[in-house]
Length: 432
Ligand SMILES: Cc1cc2nc3c(=O)[nH]c(=O)nc-3n(C[C@H](O)[C@H](O)[C@H](O)COP(=O)(O)OP(=O)(O)OC[C@H]3O[C@@H](n4cnc5c(N)ncnc54)[C@H](O)[C@@H]3O)c2cc1C
Picture 1 (tube, rainbow, N blue to C red):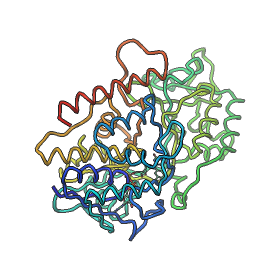
Picture 2 (cartoon, rainbow, N blue to C red; picture 1 turned 60 degrees about the vertical axis):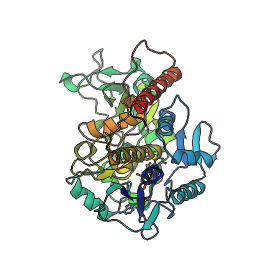
Picture 3 (tube, protein in one colour; picture 1 turned 120 degrees about the vertical axis):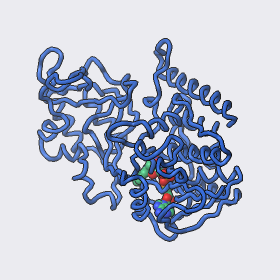
Picture 4 (cartoon, rainbow, N blue to C red; picture 1 turned 180 degrees about the vertical axis):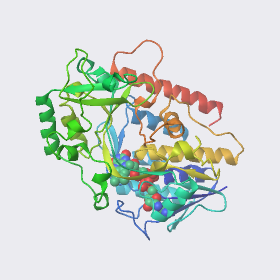
């Protein structure tokens, strides 16, 4: 089958390798070389735009679990990453130039054609994978908006997510504001001294670098908490830290309250409501630990701030990564709403697996929901409300059944073992 991959980034290259290795005629259209994006620095394929880390490898980490799944499913890029790994403790970090070179060599060896041009629409013949990333060109973004019913979303800032078990419940309480509705929010009170210390830390904390293209009106669109703190001593108390109607269980009115919202049905991950931030990751941990209930919080996802473009996948896509409106067009990578290098590769791999299966008249392969790949597929198609990108984390997996495993690392390993066993069974049943 002829497959055109638009975008030679992480998702596109992973998909191209899988399909070319199975005899498909694959063309990658990559615009860098003739037109750059605001954040790539080279014209190399599979360029890592920021950090050179592909995150943790241990089986007690969600990223490690995802890597194991991808190895089982026939991914290529992680193997190439391994071949140019640099020492990074428990993480897989790479020499980025070498990594891109290895990917380009692999694609050439597999007979993939690389065309340097800006694509403005899908290919008429065969199947197209649109994997243009968060920096998709304007023309292609417009085309996507047409294809997906103008359902493109843009976001500027994301709030951190912490694991439920790491919240100090002796310093937090469930309550609905003014007692209206279900007590769904977990409230983290601060007294005046704690509030002022938090504000001071926010004002002086180190921010992540902003690229030129990310300055502009970003701050007005979705204000980071540190920018709000700078607007005045009480600005946060009239905003996300508003205490009114949130009396503590002993009937007192706190000086300020951070609300945490459940991030998933399992209730094992919570979002810091209104705490979108551009602070460096280490600074987020340090500064937010000044909120008593979060003193020892474990961050499943840190807040981030950058321009992003992604389709409203639950409305536009099927679980096999094809568009509901056009079964010959697939969307992969950050553009479909996965977040992160390895997650982008994984989505490219899953799209490719399903294109290959479709060409053979086989049904789609959707990994079990107990796997990170499967849980990401489920997030893409079943998320409700304000759809936001998702990365690999244990919070998206269904809880373990049976007795609670007390040891945290052991519990995480149990998630991994369950997922990989389920994946093995499902893949074997589908002869994958
Ligand atoms: C500034 C920034 C920093 C990030 N840092 C990290 C990080 O440190 N760690 C992490 O895990 N994730 C990070 N991410 C998130 C994400 O993992 C990366 O964006 C990742 O590269 C996404 O992979 P992708 O394949 O979807 O897109 P990309 O790797 O960006 O690939 C998309 C490709 O499509 C090309 N393209 C775009 N439009 C067209 C067109 N019309 N025609 C042809 N080609 C086109 C682009 O040139 C690009 O090569 C970051 C994102 C951004 C924006």
